[in-house]
Picture (spheres, helix red, strand yellow):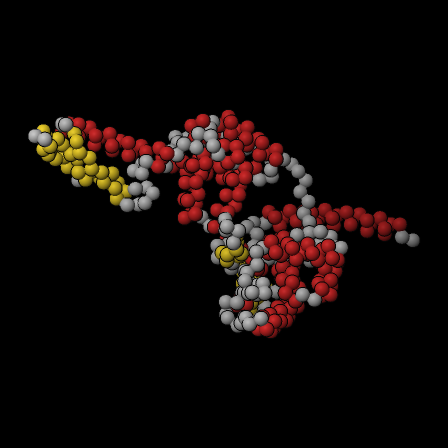
Length: 383
């Protein structure tokens, strides 16, 4: 409760305000009080209390809002909020988009000068240059929205822009045929790296995402019932450091799947090789939390390392070029060709819905339709 008290100074009467409660500091969370003396009249003290409370209501206790003038300054405050409330991998992704594609254009602009008409032109530029233009607009809008919530700005100018229609570029799904996949594993056998052979076997015969496979631990493998539990993934934070995330990409990503006998056999071989080779390096792999795929110092791999492995093998053996994620598509396509129902395929690979599975199915159906015509014509020409 604030108090106004009188006091004497050089035989004159003055007034002071004590313990004016302003609320909790929005930056530190601590209770904030204000004192002030030197008022000539009690009315002056009361007027100061009113103005102080009004200013605090508008600009915050810390006065932080009054110092934030540019988009970059607002973004830096937003970034601190994200670090406390968002997965490190999401912070890293958002930083990349904002710092590469937003800050160079509006970073130094004053917030009051950033108008929807200017941002609309910027959205069109992103649309012409980048596939992820809608996401760039989304994360920039989140910064403005945060500014509105703190009453730093009155409105979100990005929310008033319109999203251009997606460009209808032809999207070609890449995956290997059964024969190409078999050839790949024949070459891997010749290559002789048991770790890579096991990793790509798991990837191609389960449809896992590459980061899900890198996060597997031996306790996730049920050798008796031939099942694998997929509950985590490897993610990258804003400092480009890998970490294990127990928060899946989607709720469907957490799943337990059955695997074939050959894959279980290959995992068993690699477990023995890992134990022996790492023991020679002075590393024990008997801990129940031991990861299946680690480097020579038993550290987790960054997901990009898998791409390096595959690119090397593709170049060495002159194989059709695909990515590790295309091996996931390969698994889906072969399951569909084998007649497995679409819903079961989606559940096995952890798709959020059947849309992606249907895209692959449509692509396969088109190829099968073309093969059907060729088969028919070859039959008709036969004597």
